[in-house]
Image (cartoon, rainbow, N blue to C red; front, side):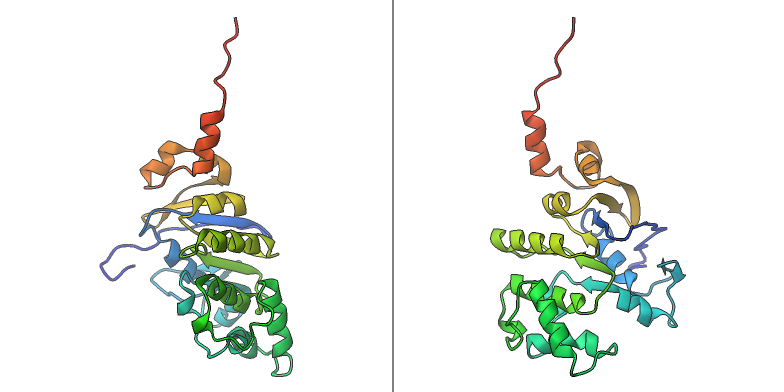
Length: 241
C-alpha cells in the first residue's frame, strides 16, 4: 500500500518458466517498479509474497536475493563504490566469494557485458550506457537465476539502446523486464503481462497483446510503431465470388 492509502499491488500472480523472458508493461503508476522491488524483498508491504514456491520471510530472504538480481532504472541508485571492480565484486564478496576469487569473477562478469578492462574506472565518470552495463555486471557476477530489469533502455541514445538490447538478448538467464519501451519488449520478450492499478489485467503472447489497439489505449499505451507499419502494409482481404 502506498503512503496515500492506495493499494500498490493486488492479487498479482505470474508464472515465469526457466529461460523465459517476460515483460511487465503498463501506464505510469501501474505498479511495475513496485512489483520488481517486491521480488527480492526490497519492499515489504502488507500481505504476503510467494516466489520460487516459498513464502518470502526473514529466514529465506538471503537465499531469494541470491537467486534474483534486480537492476534499477537509474544505475546511480545501484553503483556506490569508488571503482568498477569494487562495485561488481561487492555482491560476491558478501555471499561467500573469497578475496582471491573476486577479481576473476569480476573479469568474467565485465566480459559478459562488454566492459573488460574497466575494473579501475570510476562509475561516476562512465556514460549512462556504461553505468547500466556495470549494474548488470554486478548481477551477472552473482550468478542469479532470474534477472529483473526496471526500464533498462531509459535514458539511452539510439546507439546505446540498441547495444543494450543486444546485451540483454545474449544473457542466458530468465528475465523479467518492466518497460514502456514496447519496441524493445517485442524484440526481447515472448510474453507480456499488462499491469494497471496494481493488477494484471491481461497477459499473453507479446506480439498478439501488443497488436491490440483497443486494449493498449484503455491503459494509456500505444501499439509499437513496427506493428502499426506492418498493419498498414498488409493488403486487404480479397473477396471471393
